[in-house]
Image 1 (cartoon, rainbow, N blue to C red):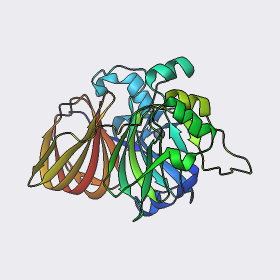
Image 2 (cartoon, rainbow, N blue to C red):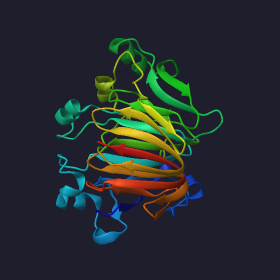
Image 3 (cartoon, helix red, strand yellow):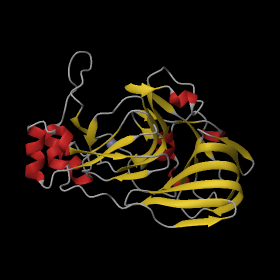
Image 4 (cartoon, helix red, strand yellow):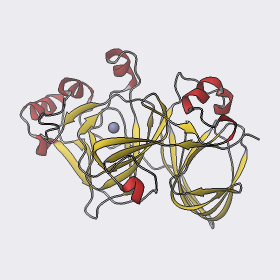
Length: 310
Ligand code: ZN
């Protein structure tokens, strides 16, 4: 049997970051403006090290390059998923991502970006930016060029446990007081549409207006989420989304439950509580991969988990 692969997160300091990755998740963070925890990542800007076993100290990208059998010989130049926890103390700039076709042509062969957000925590009157109110490209361009941001940007109320799929071309941003778990394609291509006219070191941050107008889908349509859910005495499983790039599930465990793995590999994040997997202790903030061929596994405890696979 293969070993569980535990990962060491990489932290990113951001002007909009806070300290909840320490206070809520118990991580040792680099400072009081830590915005992102790259929890399951083989991206060159934050490549997680393996925390245990025979590959201890190697990176996830190294494992992907040298031991593809652990991932069921899945194809692709890079490990396909990127799981982050984000703590926004202030509003993030409003962004949009290209799809694979646009990114390949315009960004030197890069991948596009599809991502999804599970709301871990938010303020009581929490809000999120998802979509826009322009009916077509022409109106979109007009509203942008005339700075009619309030009219253009669509803001929705949120609560803990909400989930959003963000397909390429979707205008999106998290707002202050929000913590999310993000599952995404392994890519970093982002176009900044609007930054609330803020200044960073005395000047506005660069915007990418033309590329944003190119890729924003008009009109905005909310992406379909929520698949099959199953419940039994010890475990509630909700499929949050299944798209071309990933399937993401939410699991609430209360007791003991056996699972058999059918996926090529499985990425798991503990987002609440504690317990164990096959006798190995788990706590909130742990992230690991069950490699190909791991087989049957048993989870035990009071735990909330996010599972993702390709
Ligand atoms: Zn994004």
